[in-house]
Length: 133
Image (tube, rainbow, N blue to C red; front, side, top):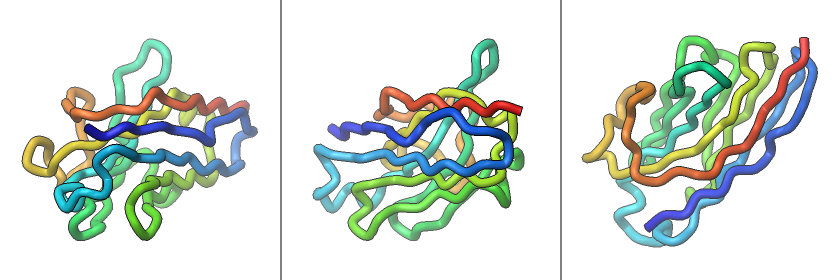
């Protein structure tokens, strides 16, 4: 089992930056954790869930949605127990509830940004990002 807890959301003006954190616990000290994919999703009211970014623990390769490429950066701390999403040049349309998710690379695609129907096994509770124009 992996428990995920997000933090760092808030209300900012367009153009500002935020850094979201996702603290993982429970399974992170297992060797198998190195085979996990870690991802950020977001969902705005009335909209479909969107995969934002993904990192594969084994090789630290990263993947981004076109809508955030060049503005957002997914990263981890050295022991991979905390996942980050650095969000720069925020736009009004970035406002959403942001979730982190994790699963074994064999159960979810780990070489692309996950789609809206991605069935990751572990999810956090979400952190809200509001952007005023």
